[in-house]
Image (cartoon, rainbow, N blue to C red):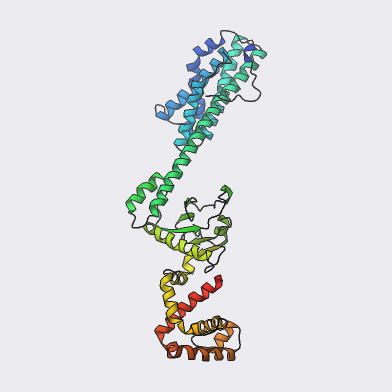
Amino acid sequence: MAVPTPHGVPDDLGAAPVPPGLAELLRAELEAVADEVEEEVRRQVPEYARPAGGVYAKRLRSAVVQALTLFVDHIADPRRQADAIAATYYELGRGEALEGRSLDALQSALRVGGLHAWRRLGRTAEELGLDSTVMAALGELSMRTVHEVAEAAAAGYAEAQLRSTDELERRRKRLLDLLLEEGPVPLEAVQGVAHGARWSVPRQVAVVALAATADQRGEDRPLAAAGALVDMESRPPRMLVPDPDGSGRFGGRAFALALRGRPAAIGPTVALTEAAQSLHWATRALGLMGRGILPRQGVVRCADHLSTLLLHSDEPLLGQLQARVLGPLDGVSAGQRPRLAETLLAWLLSGSNVPDVAARLHIHPQTVRYRLRQLEKLFGDALHDPETRLDLVLALRAEALRGQDT
């Protein structure tokens, strides 16, 4: 493994007047120096202050000995590549990441250990009567050693984090696919997959269907709520949000901003094992948004449009209902039909109150009465039959929503 050399460390350290026997003298004291460095690291870095004899303590001891060995090897031959020792620190960094610890503790230990080792070396150098030129060369070697092991540890840590993140994403993708399968989902199966994906199992969820964009750029990816499972590759893209009502994650403007301008439909809040139903209605709502039956932009909550979703849950059947109950309007002119349909719906919704209809439609009450006389001729007694009135409301409401699209 190639480890970069820090700026300011000379390439030609072999030219420094280091006494030929210094490396072997230091190698003979390596274990004693390792004892001191290990003790100092335990004292100054709380994460390493663990009882001796454990696996973690053995790793610390090995790391200290390896670093000191590398330093002595550099004295013996400054140009020597210490791939084996670098690999050791690479694995040490990986281990810290895989065990969920920060790299800060390891880097602190390297700084503390390097400083203490250098102080111990300084005492040895004084005893040997080494001059300042040799001490400067040894100081540069010390910096190089600390840098090399720190770089190797950081590289291992980064690699493990990347792989861990990729694997976690894959597991969460499998979890999301499981939750959104059609049909009943066993809670036990969900809990097993969720544990591997480090995902806390909530009691309720809601699924958000997102409008797809032609250019799936990384910066367009929504900022998911905490704990959300996101799949931007599906069509439509979808996001499963845990406990959507309990913590206000769908708090209007904040959620819309997190979606970065994407139109979206939020499915109903359901039990975890019924997440596929929430996706079904969110997808249906998103389709109605695309047609203009529901608002085209922003975030639409299915819970606020249940009657519209119900009306359009079986559109062929809705078409049959409209053809049957609105047939009398087929005999009027194309210009008259929308006005009569609008008036009839307002009259049915207002409890047959003419002034209310006039206020709702912003027309004169006499105009309302004129249109109602026309409607009486077309529909007859059916206008006063409760079941027919309900059918008329449903059919006219669907026609009015479709009219918004046109």
